[in-house]
Image (cartoon, rainbow, N blue to C red):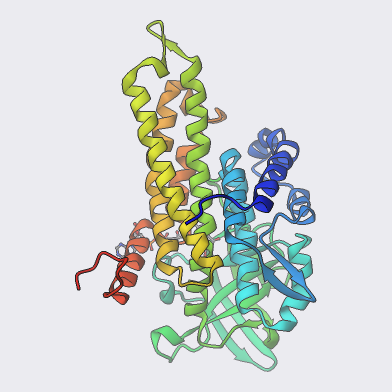
Length: 389
Ligand SMILES: Cc1cc2nc3c(=O)[nH]c(=O)nc-3n(C[C@H](O)[C@H](O)[C@H](O)COP(=O)(O)OP(=O)(O)OC[C@H]3O[C@@H](n4cnc5c(N)ncnc54)[C@H](O)[C@@H]3O)c2cc1C
C-alpha cells in the first residue's frame, strides 16, 4: 500500500495553490457580496486544465480521481461555494456527457464545456422528488424529430448561469418504475425555459436556480444514453460525483480547522492562548484524527475509481464520513471564534453553513446509509467486509 501522492499530481497541487492565490482569494469578498462568480473564472480554470475532464479527438476523457479530489479539497478550503459551482459543471454536467453522451453530442459540446465557454448543470430534484429519484414528474413527450419537455426542476446548482442542462424526465409513463425515465441534454437558451434564482445562505456565491420548462423542444440526438434508463444513468452520475463532493466536504472541514487552529495560537483568554487549555488542545487532536480518517476513506474511493474497481460503496462511505466529520469540525471551529463567528462576513461563518449544504447534495446521509447497506448485502462473503458468513 502506498499513500504517497504521485509527483505529477503533487506538482499540480502546488500550481493550483498559486492559481487560487491569484484568481480566487482576493476576489472572494466581492463574489460573496454580489453572490456571483464571474464566468471568466470558470474559463481560466478551463484554460489552466483544472477540470478533471478534457477532450481528445472530440471525445471526452476522464483524468485521475485522486488529482481531482486533491484540487477540490484545496478550492473548498478557501470557498466551498466556489468549489460546488465548479463541481456542478464538471462532475454533474460534464460527467453525464462523458458517461452517457453519444459521440456526436460530445463532439458538439465537449470542447466548449471543457473550456467553460459553455457552463453545465444537472437538474433532477423536483419539489416532490429528491431522494426518491424515480418519483420525478417532469414529462418528455415523443414528437416528430424529438421530445417536448414540461415540468420544473426545483434546485439546480448553476441553473441560472449554465448554457446546457442534463435533465431527467418521464419518457415512458406506462413502463415499470425503473424504466420510466430518460436523460436529455437541454439547451437552456431554448424558448420555454424560465430560470428563477433562489436566495440561500449556504454555498455562497454559487448559483442555485429553479428551472421551469414549458413545451421545450429537445431534438432526438440530445437523448443521452438509452431511453428508459434515465434513473440508472443519473444514479451512476451521482456515484461518480459523490467522490469529489466528499473531497469538497473534507476541504470545508480543513478550511474551518485551519482557521480555528490559527486563532487558537493568537487569541488570549484568562491570560492564556486558547491552545494552552488542554481541553481545547485535545479537541484539536480529536478533530485532526477524524479529518485524517475521512481523508483515507476518500483516497480509497479515488483509488478504486482509478483502478476501474467497483467504487459504489466506497463513494458513499467517503461522502458519509466526510459529512459527519465536517458537520462536527465546522461548528466546533466557529465556536472557537466566539461571537465573531455569527457575523456574516467573518471568514469562519460560511463553514458550518456549507457543511449543512454538503449533507444534502448527491444524496443525504440517510441515502448514503441505504447505499452502504445495499452494497454490504451484495457482498455477503467478501473477506474484507464485516458481514457474518
Ligand atoms: C445547495 C443545494 C444545491 C443542490 N443542487 C442540486 C442540483 O444541482 N441538481 C439537483 O438535481 N438537485 C440539487 N439539490 C437537491 C438535492 O440533491 C436534494 O435536496 C437531495 O437529494 C434531497 O432531496 P429532498 O430535498 O427532496 O429531500 P427528501 O428526499 O424529501 O428527504 C427529506 C428527509 O428524508 C430523508 N429520507 C429520504 N429518503 C429516505 C429513506 N429511504 N430512508 C430514510 N430517510 C430518508 C432524507 O435523508 C431527509 O432527511 C441541491 C440541494 C441543495 C440544498
